[in-house]
Length: 359
Ligand code: F7E
Image (cartoon, rainbow, N blue to C red; front, side, top):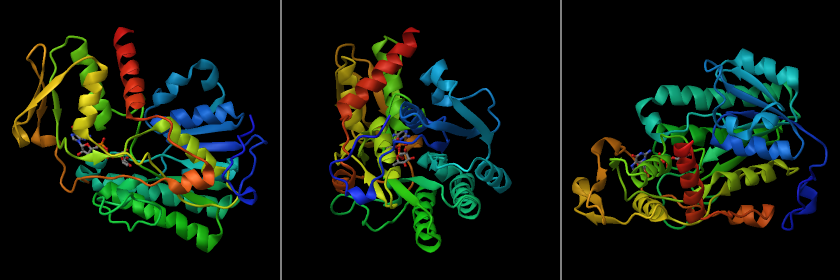
């Protein structure tokens, strides 16, 4: 399927995607992999997915694509930290495009396990970019960066030009990636770009992230189960978008003739507490908040049961208090916009969770 012509794009920097491409997605089994694989298959591309070694029967979120779609994907299993494996794959397949999504993506986990995070995120990207440079230099490489590289929101929203002050090992690895992509683009002429993604959620979000954790608890509480949602800093603020919207943007970046970096964000800031309140509202439950700090709780207004409490264990050292993105470059150059607001995200997530419970 040919890609839409983009009204805002200077025509000399946009190639209509008419020919089928041979594409590799690393980390294809994750949330973003689901949406990207689906879009690429719709476009008629030849899709290869790289999944982590060691979980031979696991295909993660790809299982939701269904049998017919799955039959069209070539699955590779291996470790992105093994240079020989990446070299061999890149040289043998000579992909037109590589979307590098694979990462250790939990900020909390990176604080506990910095070394494993650095191995996966830094070595992994370095191996892929270097294999492309040396063995398949015509391959386009798109790296999914992160707003974590900016650190705390200071004044104004964060754009491609905002100074970067990462706070976590994860944020440091994403800053490294952003700079490596720039260096390989500028020094070796590689088509390499970073999509700087702010928090993006969906029904396929991993359980280690706060939105999924909230939705799972809300679904169980709505189902009448005795459940208390335990959270850390509920006053942290994030710019939450929908992963499906962001993967459309990632495809638009890849369609450019000249590589460039883009922020993808909604520009809307909400606290974790806002997310909790909205999720309960969608489930027909009214939380009543009382107390402060570690003693803050929420009760179900109709039953009086405690449904939310604070647990010190979920606080993070060096947590980012707030991030909010300015995606005006993506809007202007790619005619991209986030279609799904926070209500829409919660609807997708809750419907999926409640559907799973009744299956
Ligand atoms: O935390 C607070 C927590 O783990 C969001 C990843 O996609 O976005 C994501 O990173 C906020 C933080 O995501 C709990 O302290 C409170 O302030 O869902 P999260 P994240 O750290 O923002 C960036 C852009 C990425 O690139 C990452 O890959 O929620 N919070 N209580 C909690 N967080 C968790 N996980 N669990 C809690 O109980």
